[in-house]
Image 1 (cartoon, rainbow, N blue to C red):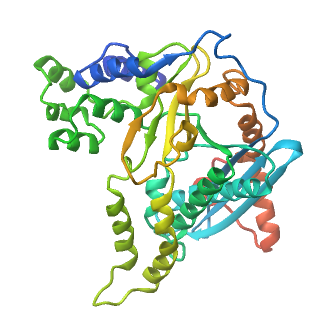
Image 2 (cartoon, helix red, strand yellow):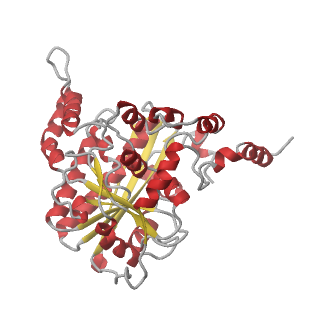
Length: 429
C-alpha cells in the first residue's frame, strides 16, 4: 500500500498546473491580465538608499499585540483565554487577560468570533490607555485597522453577548478620534495579505463598475467562473477555466504582489470608506438600526432594547469616523509583503470620513514617511517590525502554557478536577 507521502505527491503531480496557476507570473485569463498590468502602474520600487534613507528609531513608539486560545472541556463547555500586552517608551508595560466558559451548544464559529473579539477588545483597552497617558506619539497594532469594522455591525450569536461587537466598535472609534486629536500616528500592520482590497481597486479602475454586470462580479469577490460578466473572456480563457478550478476566485493581494512584483517597494495607498461594507452610509446605519429596532407588532425584545441602547451613541460617531488608508510594502527584496493601515489624515486627507465614499487611490509619496519609520524598525525576515516582534514574543499564548500552566490554575481556583474532553486530551503531551 502506498504511503500517505506518496499519495499526496501523486495528487500534487495531478494538480500541478492548477497549483502553478497561483504562482506563475503568466496571467491565466483576462482578469489576471488586468491585475498584472494594473499592479505595475501602482507599484513603486524604493528609491536609492541615499534618497529614501533609514531614519533613526523614535523612542516614543508603543506596540500592542494579543493572543488567544480555546479548549474544549469534558463538561461540554469551551474555555476561552485571551491576553494582550503593550510595550512602550521608557519601560512602559501594560497587560490584560480575560477568560470565559461558554456552553458547548454554541456553534464553533460564534465561539471563534467571540475569542477574536475578546482579544481585540483587550488590545484596544491597552491602546486607549497609552493614548490617554500621553507617553508617546506612535502606536502600532498587530493587524488591520479596517478589516474588522464592517463585521462589528452584526450581533454576536451568543446569549448575553449580542452587543459585544458594538462595544468593540466603540473602542475603535474612540481610539481613531483620540489619535487624530492628539496627532498620534496609529498604524495597523498585518503580516499576511489575504484581502482583495487592492485587486478590487485595480479592477474598478479598469472597468466601469456602474454597470450591473461588473458591479455584480466585484461584489461576488470575482469568481473566475464568472469572467463572462466582463464580456471579454475568449475561448482560450474559458478552456483554461474548465481545467483549472482549484484557484477559483479573485487572486488575493498577496498573490498579486508575489506574482507580479519582485523588488522592495510599496503600492499607492488606497483610502477605504464603505468599500467593504457593501452599502452606502445611510444604508449601513439603517441596517444596524433595523437589526436593533425591528419588532413584532411594535414590541421590541430585551435583546433588541439592549442593542438599540448601545447603538444610539455610536451612530453619530460612525458617520464622523475617519477613512482608513491602506498600502502594501516589501521592505527588502524577496521579503513577504506587509499590509499597513493608517488613518486617512496620515495620507493628507484629514476631512475624509469612513462612510462618505467607497475607495480611492492617493499617490505613494503620501506613504513615504510611514515607510521610512517601518524601515528603521525592520530587522530582517523574522523581525518585520522590532517593536511588534518583541510584543509578539512575550504575549504569544503557547499550547504548553495553556495546558500545563493555565489549566492547573483553573483547577486550583475552582477546586474542581476540570479536564479537557477526550478529543482534546489525546493531543496533549
